[in-house]
Image 1 (spheres, one colour):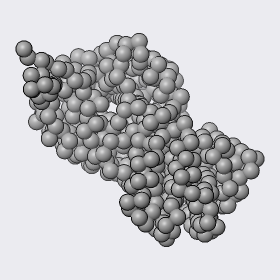
Image 2 (image 1 turned 90 degrees about the vertical axis):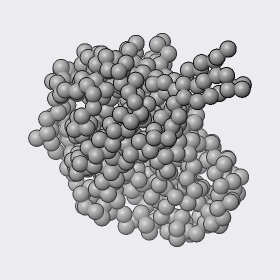
Image 3 (image 1 turned 30 degrees about the vertical axis):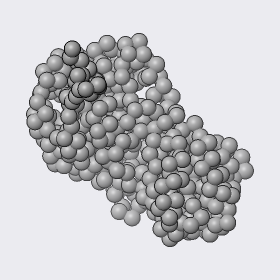
Image 4 (image 1 turned 180 degrees about the horizontal axis):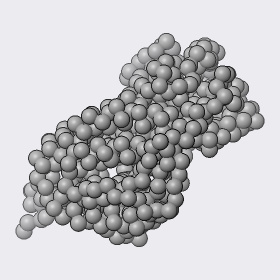
Length: 475
């Protein structure tokens, strides 16, 4: 049995003092594999106080010292990659290939941050005739909120930028990922950072999250998760004027243009739709297809999805693992029913578990066609393996439908004509558009527009999200 009952404060593992304990459940077979004690609001205060004490010295560290810290963190994540992979597989059912990618990505984040930091100018002339000097200074103690579906990767990406900028941190992982959080915290501890620079408290948003979000000692919040929770965090931050970065809900569209090579484009579009078993904010869950090619695309999608392996996340052949919880499983079932009630045509999949699976929160990978953009399955983030195919009659209509969404996190364009694809991509109202690929550029800015968030992560803009500009003008 796994036991998670510690916080990490001021460089030490300390007992969590919250009264609530939760089960850690393996979603592949519904067995209880451990227990986790939630941290209390008082634990969160102690973590913040440790970060506040550490901030003055850490904010003045030399770039060379922070580079050395990032390098140690990179090595520590790589050393603990097997444990990170295992916790991802068992705690939320991440397929082994995805779980291994996340483990490696956690290490890569620190290497990428070091690369960005090594060439960044923290002081430079600005203004008329260079009479002013711009200084980029650490914003201060930062609260980092990570979701369960990519706990290690999200913690690493946020922490890497904060360390590079010189910001002490308090990390609040999701209460649904206590074991993943513990594993990555042990890796952070192995990197031997100064006490108080990184603190980790696993607890509920209503107490631990609220304390971090409102404490006057915290200057910056970086949150990845749902739009409603992000809005609550932003509202709470106003009173103390905290800087806030939010990466929120997505409902990404994949535009398959009429000249696309379907042998290439359809597998990529399915990869975008079903990545991480559909439990990804950047999943391309709306596939916009020219009506003249609809039948051809639907048949190719039907064949490919019908052969997707659903089951044991440890099996390298598995494409779709279990959903994280019963609650998420039931949520997806409701959307599948709603799609049929609103008139969409079921192509493959449907309600219930896949044949032969009687336990575990497994969902049948499901595809609808004849979907209108006003249907719930086309407008709301399902966070599961459900793809909606929307027929379009022109490029203009495809762009209009893609943009007819309250969200704008990521988009995809598939075309044999790169110049055309770039032109279309330039009209998509999202923070990122991927053309003829589904793998992101991890040194390019990432973040959303509209209800998908504010601010950017990764690369130079990710570093500057943890910096505050100061101007000195000389007479």
